[in-house]
Length: 566
Image (cartoon, rainbow, N blue to C red; front, top):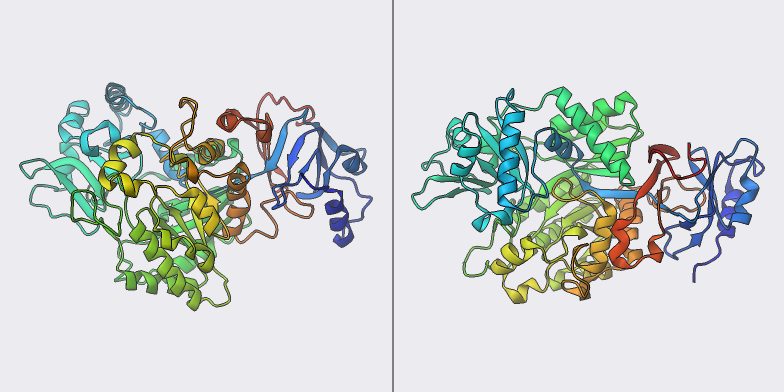
């Protein structure tokens, strides 16, 4: 049973320096308000003043906050939730992809080929044809050939990144311009796929992508500015009030800084700074510290560092404890364990959070081991660490998340039996090991804090779609019945917590954000229906009508069905 909430408002008033008779600036009433606290508190109305929640409770209880100048919005039974924190997302990359050749979501080869051909025509003024989002299962062994791309783009270099970002497809002109031939060795932490004659097939994995991508023209400042604005606007429309950029390159940092200086509205930002390729030979810490100082703004912080510990299972680049099926290869770890531990500890001592990509169980263990060293380097606990993706986790490592205060960072939309799982993952892991894929329930049970993110543009940015799959373990349009590995499902309360309180914890804002308790920031989202009144497989049908961050409207549906919202 939800507990009464009137006392929350009274408690805040007792401690507040605001006079109790001062009315709220905004009251939303006659709705289904989910406070988002650990007790699952529900209410009907919420009052906001100066960007802070001042009261939440029954309509009659909050009515005393309505004054002559209070804007009153009639919810008509619609839902209010704490605003979403996307704890792993790439807004600039998504915005750039949308400006170029966007291939995400195309599930048929003929449609993909038609789209690439149309992009080549539409981008006739560009020196290269670039874009991304193609789905790996469309090609045998996730390995598209250069000859096909030559036919689609015969006149210029072309480089198209895969949906997961860990592979790229190049045509012959791009390979030739980059000097990639049969004599080119695989770079460290990368692989050039080859045909039976040893020639580059056209598919590049991990660090090998840079061999070609480094020859492409860099994005202009205007393109980056448009990408930031487009990406953040899309997130605001989906109810995101805080976005954690998961790989802020120097170019992306400059674009975010320019956006922040412009005063444009949008979600708050926490940037995980990209580790430079030459970090082992050139100390990256001074650059990180300079970036952190430059980004110390009200809605922008750069106090985290991104580390890619491994690749992905479907390309056999994820680091596993045991070999891939039918092979003695265990994938690629991008760091030696001792070097990783020393780096993470040094970052912690310097006051940086660390955001680690870890897909395979060996990479997860390395990240946890490094986090243990970081705790010793930061005994006061100033810094925090998160491991993102966590596709395969050893059973013995699950309790370590709580013990080490490491937050699992879930991309729950992936926890369904799609072609990535059935065609590319299970065949290389085997049936028994695949029973442990995406252990969402176990991670909630084994961690003190759990966060969630989209990894957009790798997959949809919609939190509601990911929340649904986290609960159902199946696609929205799948036939009725139990999902894939249903024992590893989450509850609605758990998924909402990961998208709100968990993200706020990673942002060091758990005392001020993440719930709608009185005295906390007015971060909220209004939905067109009450999620708690829906069947689990209907959650992604809900739509965001209004997004408010720190009391400021950053998105409002137009025309708004909410009386008084404007």
